[in-house]
Image 1 (tube, rainbow, N blue to C red):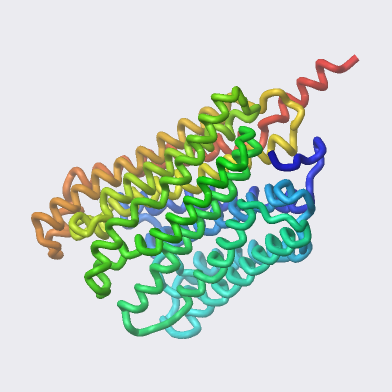
Image 2: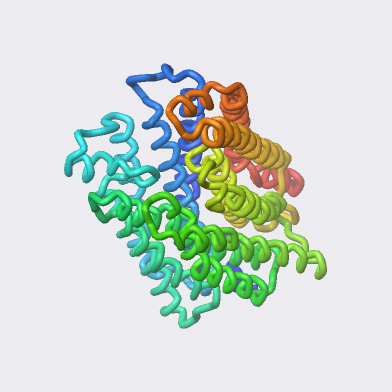
Length: 475
């Protein structure tokens, strides 16, 4: 078990982590709201047409997700790092300046997306409005800013480890991963008129940055979380973390080839990408399962019930979303028919929720326990259970609806229609596809309600118990 803080005391970096968490949760709400708008526009294409078009809502939906998850990860590291190394984070003032710079830049980019939306497609558009690349639409100045903030983040971790003269296995993996986190994002900043080459490097960001470096980053955060949450021995979490690094960076780089099928790359990527892409989530699942098993064997009980449930959801959500839903469409023989259908967002929604959202919520509940009532014998509430169930039902409902719609596209548009324009129209008008879009919106509303319940719980959990203790102890 790592060194614990005195009860009720916080490092400056942990106070900074709380700032990251609350901004992340606000952007989480923006992601859900713009996603709902985009889902409704599938049903009513004329809704807000000319004011807030589908492409803008979708862009804000995706980019808000990327930014809020990144903020959540950074908050998680700033929360656990001082406890892991037993000292304050080095360069905390620089870290705070980076936080305000990042939040300010995000606000400017969102306003540009909402008010300007698009430009003439020249160098000015690329630098100050949007690069126009799916998933990484941020203008070039914001790209440079993200890399600069990641460099400061890396400096904080490395300098703190060197100052503490202690580099644990978790911190070593974290430092290694943050180098890749800062470096790989630059791959999306290269311009080339060759579409195959452009897509080649684009996938480095979309897959290796988001799906590889993030996966290892979450593994490091969850390793530290499990040691504090369940008292899991360090040797267990570090063993699985090393295996994750081996699989994600050893086979995950080859697994990147499952995105290379149809962009003009050599044919050998068909076999390599299809085989290796399914192995990445295994170690992180095993780490949490092993930790829970070890806790049960040694009768180690956690006092933080919501954090425990979100940690378990992270393990199995990662396996189902990233592993099962990813693998069932990644083989080239299948991807030939499924690529570009609603199966892709079905996988994306489950994977990002299962692998990342649940991990951040685990850490936030752990942080709130330390901040509000570390002396409570049981940090719990009734409200988080409603948020948990509604959120899980919402995400699985949306993914199931998109899966049905995607299978309809795969059969009607690709297998039967031969990918013609008329076949595309036929698939869009098919009752199964249209019903799938309706149910996606319905479960999206479920998810939005669960977000509101979650937000209320995070704002109030632990406070009622504090008042109750005071009342009982009053003379």
